Image 1 (cartoon, helix red, strand yellow):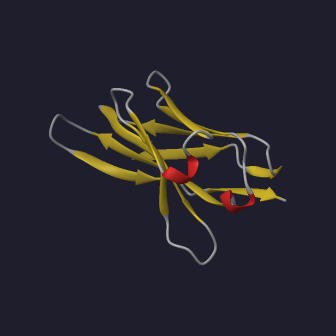
Image 2 (tube, one colour):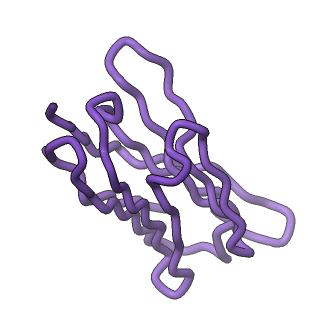
Length: 120
C-alpha cells in the first residue's frame, strides 16, 4: 500500500508564490517519474511538470519560466515551486508518482489534490 500526502495549496494574490509538496510512504523499491497535473473547473486534467528519476524535468509551456519542479529521493518527495502566479493558474493540483516495486513492475499513484486559488 502506497500513500501520497500533498500539502502547500492555498489562496494567494496574483504575482505571489506557493510551494507544493507530495510525499509517498509505504513499501516500494523506488520511484520513477514524479510529476504534477492540474485541473481547473470545467477543464480536463493537464500536465504541469514532470521530473525523472535522473532529475530531468519537463514543463508545460504555460508554466515555463515560472514554475520549477524538484525531488528529494531520500524523502520520497516531489516539490513544485510556483512563482509569478496568475489567476489562470487556479486549479486543483494533483501529484503523480510512478512507483517501482521491482525492476520490471511499477504502478501509477495519484494524490487527492490540493487547491490553489490565485486572486486578481
